[in-house]
Structure formats: structure tokens, C-alpha cells
Length: 118
Length: 113
Image (tube, rainbow over all chains, first blue to last red; front, top):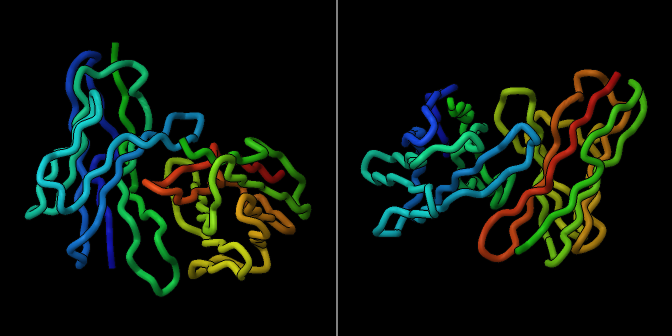
């Protein structure tokens, strides 16, 4: 079964510094995609970045980059130049390929709560 | 971009009553809608998958008679929490897959008193 593991329940970072949020995954499929979402206290899910398993380069979106290490099955999110508004929950996710009970939904890790200190 | 509008954003209801949550795709047709539940400080867990014109698929452990899902059109999926109890208090959020990725509703925070 597919699984997403986020081992950091909470992280602190000083404003303007970079921070790495860890994510490891388990899948038997060769083709898959990994997502990162930000969830502020309001509850909305904000898409940050996507990495496809066949993408040769690490994905980048502004201050967000994904450190994709396929052999280690890790897809860590790097946020550069942290801002106070980055304080939120961050979820790593991948598409569920279990077609028995559900098709195409995302499965999520437990999340990491990031707090940016001024 | 593709938008899913979810209402209400917050609802408080009395124990034993029913609550309906709506998710509308505003600028695309959603043949499938995913419904998630999120307890405080926990992750999103898939409850069910609704498909337009057919019965929803429920995840193991989710009561079909309690969480009624209707997907009667390509732009509207609803989740009705029937005979709500305090333990149903949670954050409910829907998601669809327009071309290019996933889009989420803004979520509904349900409190049953």
C-alpha cells in the first residue's frame, strides 16, 4: 500500500532563513506524482508544488523547491527566505493508486506545523 | 484556474439534526468529487468518492447511512451528515480533479452541540 511519512510534527524557523520539511513515500508504482500543500489556520488547502516521478529536474516554484531523491524515496520541501505568512501546516501527498476502493484521490502525510519566528 | 466553491464554511447544529454541505465546481465539470474529513491537528482522511450519476464509493469504516453523498450533476456534489452527534464535529473538505491537478473547496467546520 502507498504511504506518505512526515516525521516532523513541528518545525521552527527564523524569519528570512531557509527550512526543509521532510517527506518520504512508499509506492510500488513506477509512475507517480508528489504534491505539497500548505494549510493555514483558515483550513484551505493551498497547492505549492508538484514533482513527477519521471521529472529529471527538481521542481521549483518561487521560494519553494522540492528536493527529490528517487532512490531514497524522499521528496523534501525547501522554503527559502521564510516569511511570517509561511506559518501553517504543510502536507506532503501522492495520488492513491489503489483502485479497489477509490480512484485518483490524494493520500496525505500527517503534516508538519511550521512556525516562523520574527 | 479551476475553482470549487464549498458552503457553508462553518456550521453549528444540534445533536440529532442533519447538515448538508455543498461543493460546486464553478468553471469546470467535476465527474468525481473526493470528500475528506480532518480532525483537529490531524491529516486529511478520505471518506468517500462521489461520481456523477452513480453511487458514491465509501472508505472502510465510513457509515454510508450517516454520510449521504449525492452527485446529481457535473457541477454539484453534496455531503449530508444525518443525525449528527458531537463526535461528527470535524473539518470536512471536498476536492476535484480538473485537468492539471487537484483543487479543493475551502472546507466546512462542523460543530455539533
